Image 1 (tube, rainbow, N blue to C red):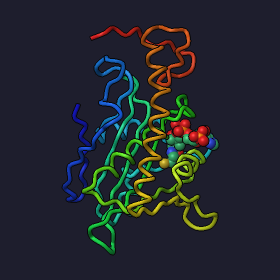
Image 2 (tube, rainbow, N blue to C red):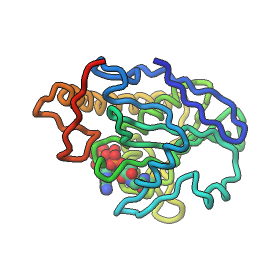
Image 3 (cartoon, rainbow, N blue to C red):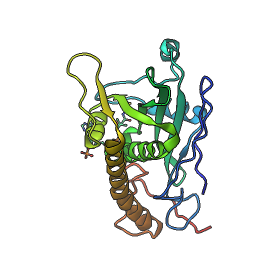
Length: 236
Ligand SMILES: CC(C)(COP(=O)(O)OP(=O)(O)OC[C@H]1O[C@@H](n2cnc3c(N)ncnc32)[C@H](O)[C@@H]1OP(=O)(O)O)[C@@H](O)C(=O)NCCC(=O)NCCS
């Protein structure tokens, strides 16, 4: 199944068609059922963010659509907005920006701008899966020449998630930025790390989807709040 992410801002015309080797947008043989990662519209992203972009740990976060953030945004970038669904439930969203390097026009810097999961679905690795998958896809697209990745990592989960992928921890003083620089070798290792993490998480989640689909009592659906019963799925 084609998986096309293309969100262009300020004249950065590029089409994004990653090779999705690990899944094709559907699982357990039921189209549009189970786990899906795909582009999300700006409207849906903003709606989701307005409901869930806050946490007891750090309070509300700003997204790149907030007028005060937009106003400060001086540089051109390409934007990739993605969502992770469990059947029809949107469970997580993330916003990535790709900037041209200021010193070398052939290179780009990738920023994880924000990742958001509803409070009742947190600590289930949804953010980790979504971020690692999109890093893999964006870095596997050789045309992009991403030479570094960074994120403002203030939330402890973001720090942890990025640390697992070998990002440096944010400085105690100054801007809390986690960062990784990539040369040819480290880039290959980084993609392997991301793929490994996606594979492990995906296998666990697919198993849960299979339990859920079969009405197995071991089902602990990762896409629903604890205790909520899944709908009965009918094969298409
Ligand atoms: C940040 C956020 C996206 C994390 O989502 P999540 O799906 O719960 O994250 P994961 O389950 O993938 O957790 C990633 C890691 O952080 C850990 N973690 C999760 N929540 C944590 C918390 N509150 N404190 C400390 N560690 C935490 C997890 O155990 C996991 O570590 P591990 O892989 O070593 O086990 C979610 O809390 C959120 O949406 N917060 C509001 C928006 C926000 O602040 N976003 C971050 C700024 S962009």
